[in-house]
Image (cartoon, rainbow over all chains, first blue to last red; front, side, top):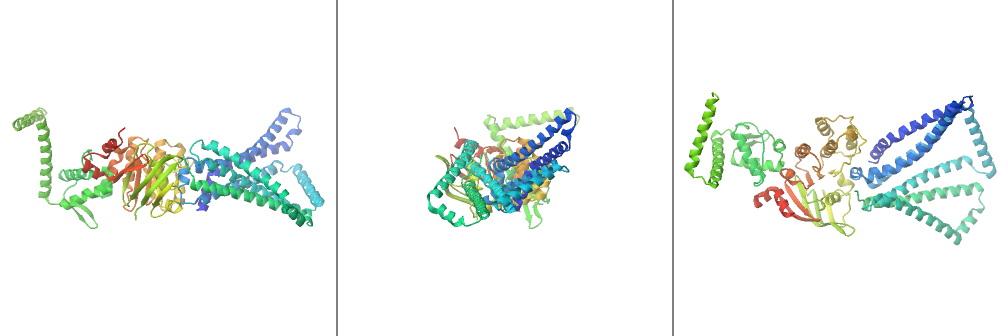
Length: 270
Length: 130
Length: 231
């Protein structure tokens, strides 16, 4: 059943995301014209057009990123907690499957948005020496960092991407949990949701701060510090990254449990 | 066939009467197969169980009979249909007499009123050249 | 086995008692009217029966199991409001129901849609309110479910649509399945029902068959309702 939920979830979201990516691609082509030399002519009008095209491109990038967030929150809200909820929440599927289908589809769209933006940059710079220069510079920087800190640049990059991905998923679940709790109230559901979003944010920051203090107080940190002191800088960095990813997973898991509990036990559709 | 229901009697009883009228008036001819319970219920806009109950009662009275696979049929017994027609007519007459009685008419007056009505109709027919 | 059974069913919203101590049994093959004034607890009952709400006390089972993933495969639910996604076309909606419900009779649904003159490519968004309600009802009645829960199926539609909806319900009658219709428009549904349940301020005040009421009280269910709920 999860497969079928995913299928229909993609159907519902693709009709919004597809055209957005198309717009992004078109503005990237426009910006490509600029990079090809619109700015280098003697005509003021072409200069202006060139600047506008680049602006349109950056607006499109921001737009696509913002929209993938908005779609993620809106789908959960519209599809499960509003009128459509009467249909979705009475399907012969479990709440877990419902939440996972929303989460997986959102995550895929975040990844797709990342790839689309990368692709758009390539299109913009297609056949232009800028991209070569950029790639050259990036490579040099990476090499220098790697050499300086004795890090494995590629692995670090992978970890950063993974962290970003899990971070996005955790953020999704943060929104889901706030919506699920807010909509268990019989009135002012949206206001409660917003409030709960901030309550969760505050609570997680508070807990994180408390944890930091605790680590400082307890001998734990010293013990860990002593343990890894002999490690290379690279190993230490990897450990930090892994810990941060694990933190994201735990952060998301807590919100997952909250979301499922409230959808299961305290659902109260209008 | 037009189905109409009043508010004071059980629906199954009203269904029985209306199916009887249908049989007597030839909407459901003798020996013909009746529509299925579902179709009759849909047509009359009533609950299928209620329609089933009405048909079962008619079957018990012998006015319809069922053949295991082919469905339900109207009886071919003309005398029985005639008797039903008679009893329906008697019902109408009793109701008519009751209503006239409530208006204060005596039997003789009612009969003369009926005769007057009859001659009125004859005049109308004659003037139309029928 | 009864299609629906509840014992001591109670639902509270904060301090408000929406349903209190309801005992009910619905046998297969029955079309049952859940009748009561607005706010009497009809919708709460139906939401409990399909697991959109959790009881505060008491038990409720559908085909022997508590409302959940399993029971939902056997329950076909018509909500009070239009819940079908409006961006979908009729075709996509058929796909949706076909994917999630194994008992969905796609050919029956297609036939009914065609009868209404609805094109497969037509989007729900482009349909009138009445047509949307009919489409939603067609989807619900095209399932070969064990229990149909219809929440106010004839509220807010014109008399012709009302007739269409009622004849669709009769036309899809299945002696193995039960139908529960919640409504306050009694005179319209009375002839379609086997049984009625009167519900008032969260409590069942009467459960009886329609013809029993007419036979014993010499009045229609509508008239009895007006008497019981006189203001």
